[in-house]
Length: 487
Ligand code: NOJ
Image (cartoon, rainbow, N blue to C red):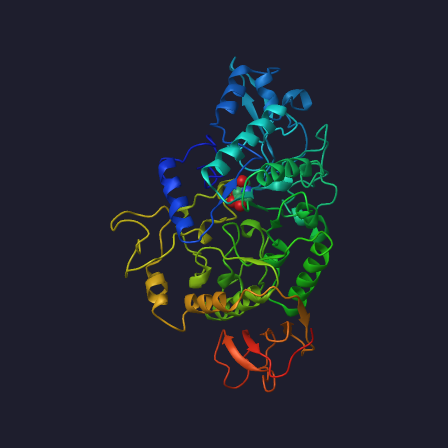
């Protein structure tokens, strides 16, 4: 748990803190019985430092075959400096020097994330074979798909050349071109190999990549016909609440994915960024991994929630698939005041305690009741991150009973959604997004400061705010047009 579970010591087991393989089997069976599918996160760029392979590599010493599964290299400057200038996503350099079995400082190993997450060398045939078997292990158990963690990290340029990072450079992979440790083309060989394994099973097995790369064209490479089915859309997630920016992302996404025949995805939040209710109430409304490198400012949560509700209707109206991060359907805000002593994200320590990291978006769900742990666990048991007492007003139980709650908005939107028709933009005022999906569905999102007159636009099916005086600022509506729109 050096990185919230993204440091795996045994790929064929469940951490006892969470249960057993029998529990996992029961979860799969119960989900399938309800028509739900289950996707497993596969962390293959790196293992835990406690993985038997890494333990053996440390013990075997320099030059041993055990070290070949990872990137062990001699340092520069007589060994005292790291082998190259690569950086960690959590801050600082991507190399840690080991103490050799004889007690002396020795080689360095690569970790693009925390030091407890040593990178595997995917050129090693044993690594490839082992992960083939791991994929089969989980597909055989009945999982329906795989989320590929940190996909662009899995291949490295041969010879591990310097990336040319400036001292103190941030890990901003969306701006990198020809970077030797990110989005290297050989990563696609691995993805094709996995797709063949998925396709060898009956039924649908879905792959989705986490690929934070430089623009939609690079992203489209991950979803070519023989690679992954979908990829999370980080350009959409990181976009500020701004009509021009969002429209550009939508158009760029559809234009890049159309030629490879892949569906778009739309994502507003994940366990790696500040929750969008909080972001959308700030002066700067965009997102970044871990919240790093963003200007912090006070947040207006009422404004953020209005925008989040409108964003939900935009997201669920766009063509493609939508990913909903747990709790966004409750309109949960980021927990910004976690006490320092409970912070667990490695970003906190690695940034010299300047970037708090991702814990604030990971606080456990409030299910029911009037005080923590809100049904997440048994009463009296503290949750792994403390829930704010004020979440008593946001529990699932409270919101399910309230037809105007954010949960009800998501439920109604999910019931209405489900068409497979291309979108067509409609003429609209500055700051307004309006589009049709065929003749019987229209979405209007108001990101301007003025109400939008909906007269003649159709019958309102669903809206994120009351529309009596038109569509207010920071609100969205779904309509059934009076007259058929453009096809
Ligand atoms: C991406 C995951 O979403 C994030 O939570 C994790 O820290 C890194 N990959 C490293 O595995």
